[in-house]
Amino acid sequence: MSSTTEFLTLGIETSCDETSVAVLRGEHDVLINSVYSQVDLHAKYGGVVPEVASRNHVVKLPYLVQEAMQTRGLCLQELSLISATYGPGLVGPLLVGLTHGKGLAYGLGVPFIGVNHLEGHVFAHRITQPDVEPPFMALVVSGGHTSLIDVPRYGTYQLVGMTVDDAAGEALDKIGKMMGIGYPAGAEIDRLATLGDPKTVRFPRPMIGSPGFDFSFSGLKTSVVYHLRKNPRERQEDIAASVLASVVEVLTKKSIEAARRFHRKRLVVTGGVAANAHLRKALAEAGVERGVEVSFPKRSLCTDNAAMIAAVGAFRFLHLGESHPLSLKPDPSLGLGLGKSNE
Ligand code: KG4
Ligand code: ZN
Image 1 (cartoon, protein in one colour):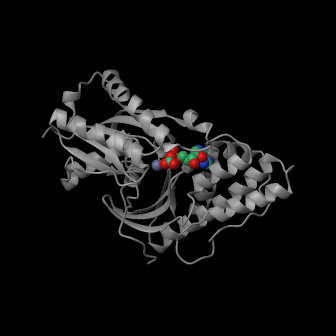
Image 2 (cartoon, protein in one colour):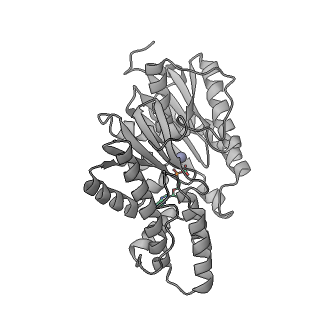
Image 3 (cartoon, protein in one colour):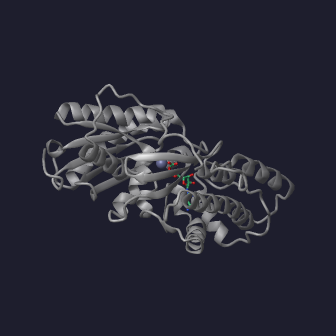
C-alpha cells in the first residue's frame, strides 16, 4: 500500500440532486471537490424528481470524474481507493454513483468502499478542523435530515434524536413554496428574515418541551398555511423571520441540551441548513452561555459534496481496515449509529 500522503481516494456523491466528485490526498488534503447542482432542473417541479435526478447523474458523473483528473493532472491509475455514497438517499441516484464507483474500482483493481452519507456530513468537520477530535455531539440539519448524533470517536455513533416527520430544510422549502419563493427556499428565507420582525407571528415551537431529542417540523408548516390563508398581505420578510425564529429556537435548544446531557463540550453543526446566519448566531450565543463550543465546517463542505465521502472512505480503509465487496447495494434508508438513547 502507498504511504498515507500518497494515498489518493476518489469520492463520489449522488444521493440526491448534487453530482459531486472529489479527490482526497491522505485524510485531509482535498485536491479537488467539484459539485454540479441540478437545482435548476428541479426548480420548476418545486422539489427533487428522482427519475430526473438519476438521469442527470448518469450524464454528468463520468464527465466530472474525467474533469477532476485532468484539473489536477492525475490519471485514474494513480487512485488508491474508490468510495461512493450507498445510503441514505434516493435509490435511483444512489445506484448511479455506486455502480460507477464499483465499475471504476473493478477496472482499476483497487478497493471499493460504500459510505454512509450521514457519516460524510460528520467528516466535513474532520476536513475543516483536523486537530479537533471527537468526542462531540453532531447536528446534521439539511433538506433530507435533522439528526443529533453523539460521536465518542470517529467510526462510532449513537443516534440521539431525529425528525419524526419533515427535515428542517424540507419544511423551509415547503413553506417557501407556499410563500411563492423558488426552490430550494432556505437561503432566500434566511435573507428575507434579516429584513423582517421575528415577533410578528408566534408560530409553534414543535416538541421543544418534549422529553428526548426528536424533532418535528410538519406542524409548523401547517400553522404557516393557516396563517397565510388568513393574512395574505403579511410581509414576506416578517413571515420568514417568524418561521426561522421557531426553527432556530427548537434546533438551538435541543442540540445544546443534547451536548450537555451527553457531557460533550463541543457541538458540530453541518448540512445545508447549517449555512443559516440566524441559526449560526443563535447557536454560537447559546454555546457561550451554556459552556458548549459550537463548530461549523466550511460552508462548501456543509452542503452535499464528495470530499466528505472520500474522507470517510479513506478513514475507514486506513484505520478500520474496511472495504466492501462489489455486491454492495444501495440502502435508501440507511441509518447511522446504534439507535436512540436519551442517557
Ligand atoms: O445538505 P444539503 O445541500 O442537501 C441535503 O442533504 O438536503 O441541504 C439543502 C437544504 C435545503 O433544504 C435548503 O433550503 C437548505 O439546505 N438551505 C438553507 C440555507 N441554505 C440552504 N436553509 C436555511 N438557511 C440557509 N442559508
Ligand atoms: Zn446531505
